[in-house]
Length: 123
Image (cartoon, rainbow, N blue to C red; front, side, top):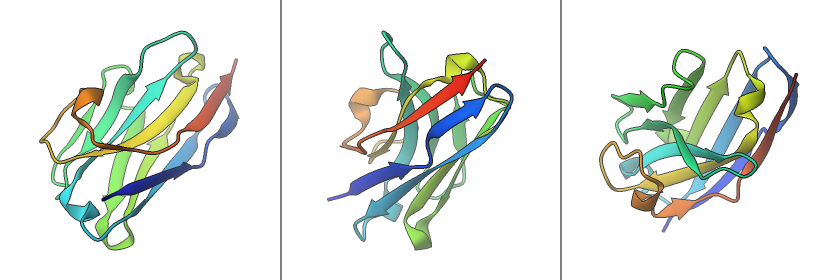
């Protein structure tokens, strides 16, 4: 069992930065791959970034590559999404997720989800 809670969302001006944090409970969290997804107004939930349980590899959606960075600290059961150079199109509810599958970009492959945190980027 894994429980995830996101925090760090808020309102930021275009070009600014935000750091989202995902706090996980469960002693087996370090064995799960972790990811961030987002869902903007009127849009489907989309993949943002993922990191393997070993933190040896990270994957990013093309839309955020070079601007966002995903990291994890298994000792603290924490996954972080550092978002820089934010754009208005980044406005969405951001969700942290965990999966036992390797390197998936599909939301259907993730077993555990946080409640989401709102990120709003003003122009």
